[in-house]
Length: 250
Image 1 (cartoon, rainbow, N blue to C red):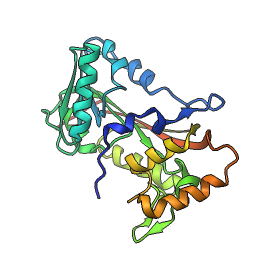
Image 2: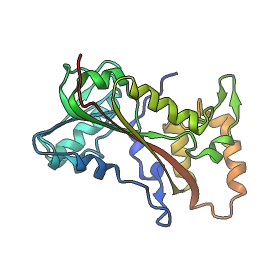
Image 3: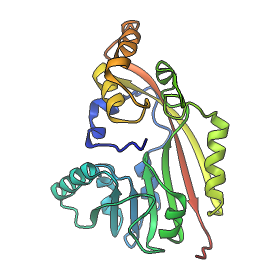
Image 4: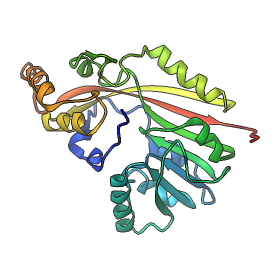
């Protein structure tokens, strides 16, 4: 089953609040700005409502956000118009069939969304750079384990992988097309409210085929055992992938 994010994904409840005692290991916007220049063109795959792109707009000549969800595209266009950013454009499109010519972009980003490596390689310019943040297999692991298995295995997203296997799979896939690949893993803690966790379950693929009728009792039983039910700590796990080609022939 293909999961398509909706604009609820940008809810502050769903995203929770980062615990100040465990800061994020990197700031994704800073990583993207480090390689920016006023003449570069950036593509963001799975741009969502484009709220992550707004801070990047002053640093690039042009930014294009593409998303497969029309709901997201509509929300993103409203946000871009509100912020009056003529160099930021939003397009409806599929990450596996990007609607762009070969060698179009200097930088390609993807911030916790779906992507296709051959398509990224195709539309990236020679010596272009890819920066991807991906959910790690240990993300919210203890919480995901509560929902058990189905006929496909663990229902929690990426729980069927072991960490080393998970990281190695990304490295091998990118190394087939890129001659410079680095992968960094990071952890931090986020505090959620019960409503925020329910939004997480309903509007993201955290738990496969989440069902309000059958899964809510599991959630409520777990919640009843917690001492602090308003600030529920969950461990976040992310992977930062950077890839570049010094030479490129298509």
